[in-house]
Length: 89
Image 1 (cartoon, helix red, strand yellow):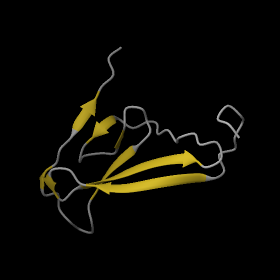
Image 2 (cartoon, helix red, strand yellow; image 1 turned 45 degrees about the vertical axis):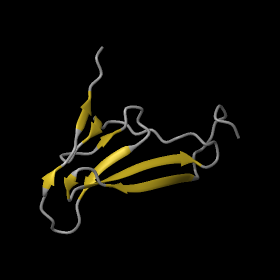
Image 3 (cartoon, helix red, strand yellow; image 1 turned 60 degrees about the horizontal axis):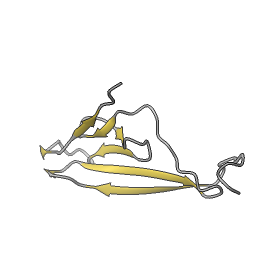
Image 4 (tube, helix red, strand yellow; image 1 turned 135 degrees about the horizontal axis):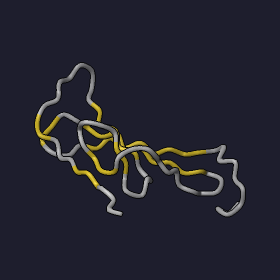
């Protein structure tokens, strides 16, 4: 089946990656996905573009969600790297 066909997207593969940036105990769970039938990538919506320790965000093209996470009852420690991307219209 090609991407232009009407695919039901009933068989989806997800990739999870745990990344760490900067001198901090905060990590980022990076999520991507793809339909195994038609190979179209999953696109995230409704999240701000960028990455930071305060809230979930996504890649500019919507292909990856980035969720800041910590383990157990850890307190935020250190300086995390963050950035925001704003669209100018």
